[in-house]
Image (tube, rainbow, N blue to C red; front, side, top):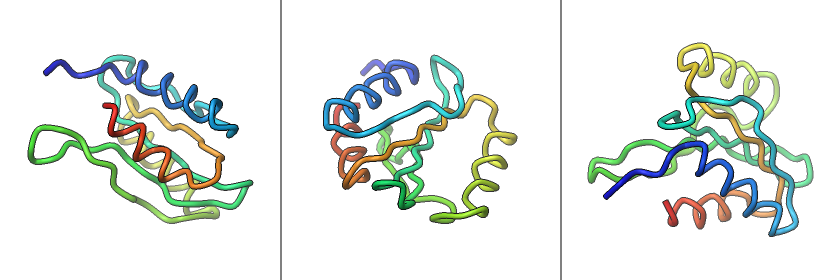
Amino acid sequence: MPRLKSRFLVDLLLREAQAAGGFAAVLARGDADAGAILVQCSDRGRPGPLLERRFALDGGYRWEAVGPADGEERENYCERRRKADPDLWIVELDIADAPRLVAEWGALT
């Protein structure tokens, strides 16, 4: 099964969030073809989980909560991840029940 490019997946997530009445923005652009994707979830400015798309043992992908939930620690975590992986995409998603939207979007991938 062919893998969808990271840029395509990020663009799809941005459209899904906007169609659902939320806000989404790319905070850091990664590799267009195969960059990892980290989503900063929030609901009306209140921080939610950080979700990262990772390879699963079955060859597919899964979404995993990573890093601290909010504050300066969250910012530092994202900076460290970006330094360690310059191909990483970081997307901010501000919408009610953002993890659900990510899960639904992830099912498409």
